[in-house]
Image (tube, rainbow, N blue to C red):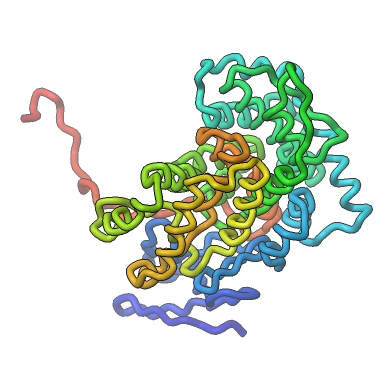
Length: 427
């Protein structure tokens, strides 16, 4: 028997079930509140509302914990591969050697795009932002792959999941190449997922491209760190779009559009811009004082969910050092600024009291820049990695019999009912 919570509204008392998950706080089930008490709840941003039940990702923000299907993110980032994490998120368990071989083959052999699809890119202006291209191109996939848009068919759902994971690097690389005015590079089946992506982004016809294992591992690790993050804004957007029965390609395009917002996917670019603005270590005290005086914003610190050290930040810091050392840029002044700023923030009572710990975006901007990506591509890479989280959440939502079409309520504060008057009688 579930625990019950009692709510008194005027003369009415309503009993509501209290649910518990594997971990996390208890949840008051308010589904019957409107029917029984004729009231709604008010929760802007839904920060105190569970919109769904999920088995995919667990976050304990106070303890700095992030688990994918029960596995700590640090273990996955250090020991696993992005494609293995994709399998885990989609299917619930780590694959056997045979299962992974089949999954790897399915993804690898779906990386090509329809030949006519390449013409689609030509419709964008030559200076189009890569994220603008991503929103349009991913939404257009449903026009090319009709055989995997029936959301009621589990086989088609899996095919569309594989297609999105496989084709996203190809689309992202084409957005990058188009942005740079360079020819497209087709994927190759003999390369790993991350190798393929880096080659499609950085190889040119004038010279041979040679994979670098350090940079490949870094790229793979970055993808893992961004694979899923519970019910954030873009994931909630994907679920909300999917709740209407929209095809998966349209749902993922909706997620990309939401991710484009600077308060969500653009945080690492803002963190990098802050480090560039500070410039040198000797300017940090002045900037920190400006933050305290509310003249400057401290980017890359603090998180809506984490009230402790972001568990992804530790892995990203290590990755950052490895990449900068490999490309011969370990003396990057921005890294020195970042390390000193982190040191001050972790020891200054002002930041400690406000729980402004470094998050994953703090180091990822420097790392991506060292890999050769301009700021315009940062959110594209985020979208590429998050696709598996989005499609896993979408698939879980479709297969959940308790899910309904999303339909939030409101507090209406507009004009009361009134009669229409003709224009000649209005003042």
